[in-house]
Image 1 (tube, one colour):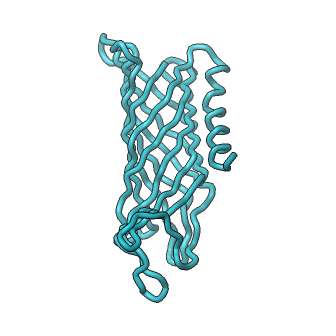
Image 2 (cartoon, helix red, strand yellow):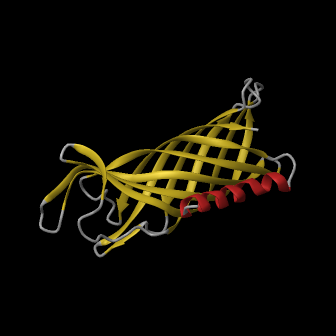
Image 3 (cartoon, helix red, strand yellow):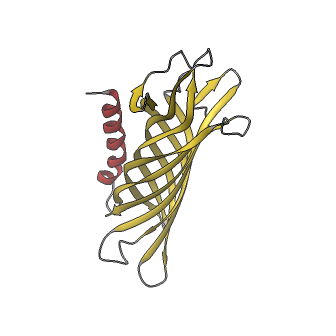
Length: 218
């Protein structure tokens, strides 16, 4: 079994544990689309690097603590990265174009969550903010070479991305489980790296992502 699969299974187990530990917990799954941007320490996106749209999926448990407060534990799998128009080697020779740099992360979030009912229709609003741990699970570069899309290797050594990244996540959402016939939820989530995703001689770089997600809550 690959390291990526083992990591994902471990994180999913961590997320599922509170459901067994306490009655009344809400749990479920989420999936959606992510816009990822690699930001450099000088506040730019590196010049020529474009945001990358990817997918995400995960499971969660929200355990009652007191009143409207819950402890949220979530395990997710995110595909981040960036896109570049062309890639040149150390001799400034163009090697490939339309490069899609893909970095997959298994993510564990533990955060306080506040939930409140809106009106009398059963619609519930929730918000959360807390620390996050990301583990780099896979990385690849897909580009156009001689008119064909294929997975490529970089023509020279480049600094790799960190295997462990700490960050912070915030989100707001609507839980429709008590308002409609299906236990649906809709969520907006923002993730920012606190420690560098990659360190270069001329500065560090960090990911920030915006995600729109839908899911089921039970």
